[in-house]
Image (cartoon, rainbow, N blue to C red; front, top):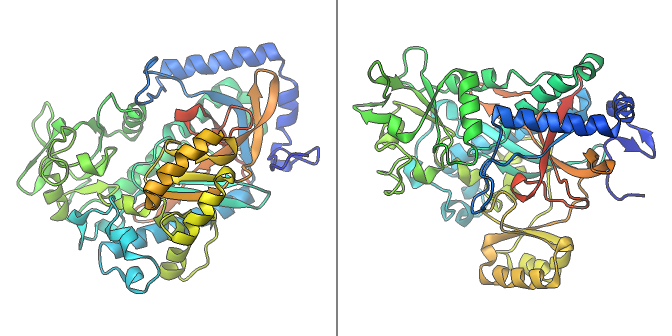
Length: 470
């Protein structure tokens, strides 16, 4: 008996959400599966859905492996997740408004001041400023893992520029093209309204000085960025301009876009570049990606930046441990979604425990992402563990540790047929005048047998995520 929760089978019986997929799976011969897999890859490449891995040689336009076996949630499972995600997004935004304002949660002793004010993601440039509608993080990507029928845990929060939503949309598009009968036989909630809702969210936080229909642009670092495909894809679907720093300039109280018909005022910048590169006059002076003077216009209410500079202090992995406390402090509610138990190596007792149990824990850098800078104890060699031990001892505050969770598995097409593989989930919560969530998400799958690392940069794949209509 596997120790992992299998989302399709319960004691050999098919669980309700997957009832109609068993026949589909059994009726697909290996030859057709191979053909369909090749068709999916061809579609991905033709559409241009590729990503680059920094510091790697080889193909700069690598495909993220796509698995054709969808992951399925019932309407009631999703309703609970949605409620918990929205609650968390509200609390994270309340925290950001507070710590750049009066800092009540710190005064109340609920979170240590050093974790906030000495955090490299804390931007002094926005202290005392309240962005339009009090929203700092407009797109919150919350990474969730499942360990049982009713057990969901938040692994981390992404409050800056969470990527991957293009895969949520394209996985669905490709599945509908390849298996139209599946969609006729199952009532599946659509996800294709995401770009429309994102545009509405961005427009709803237009600045005070915007008097007409807001002009929105998507600011990209350019085509060398690993997520450039997603930037152009979203701009296209929203019907907005995709711009680089050199396409914008500041004059007077506003930001302007260079066009063939002369300058056009910009009201909302959906930025997909890091804080450090937004404005060379305010942050890194050597940045060629940003717009000189953009922060002055932002502070004076002439433009909105989404997500707001400084939002990253809320998704730091040490601050993450206090999100349940934020829910209680700001909303007066109990958290619907639980955190994974976490040890902060900056605390002496926690550090001792972590160093004594490295072979059983997952250890992560506080600011790390993409599966880099982490140790998966049970999957590591003695040498790797000892090497990581030295890193932790050299800078304890830079690390947190968590138990190795028994991530749920879903059926996945592999060379031998169909086999269970571990998955996680990233829904995208949009926060503007209201809070909205499309009924779907990015499911990432660890394609290597036994692996718990789902990141695409570490060899993970993606699959379509279904929410069944009631």
